[in-house]
Amino acid sequence: MSVKLKRLVNSYEERMLEFLETCVDENYKIHTQVSLCQFCELDSNLNVELRKFFFSSSVDALITNVDYKPCLVVDFQSSYHDYPEAKERDRKKATLLALAAVPLLYSRVKDFGLLHLYSQSEEVVCNLFTGKRRENAQALIRKYCEQSFSSDIRITGW
Image (cartoon, rainbow, N blue to C red; front, side, top):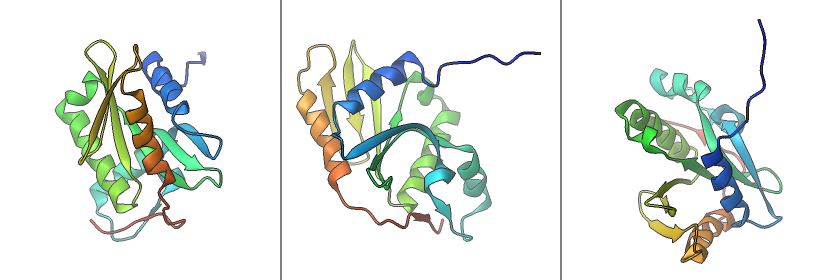
C-alpha cells in the first residue's frame, strides 16, 4: 500500500487561477478547492438532498477579502459539466450559494483560448492569448469583489 502526492489543481485550473490573480489586488485572497461547509453554515430547514450535497461539495475558487469574508465563487467549467449529472451538481451548488448570498461566476475556455465568464444575468468574453477584452473580464471579477456582503453567511430555506 502506498500514498502518492498529486497536484491540487489541473493545468486548466492553474491557468484560470493565474488569470484570477490578475483580477484582484492585495485586498483579496484566492483559495482553491474549498469545501462549502468551510465558508457557509446550514440552516436546519434545508432539505435532505441539499444538506447531503452541502457536506460533499467544494468550489474551484473562492475569493475573499483580507478578513477572509467570501466575496465571489468562480466555478471552472469544462466539457465534463455538459453531462446531466454534472449539471445537476452545478444546479445544487448554485442554489446553495444563492441561499448564502455568495455570487457565483462560471468560467469556461472555448474556441482556441476564448474565456467566457458568466452568471445567470451577464457574460463577458475575452481572448486569453491576445488579451483582447481582458479588461472587461477583470472588471467583472472586480465588480463582485468590491461589493459588500454580510459577514454572517448562512444557508437558509429550500
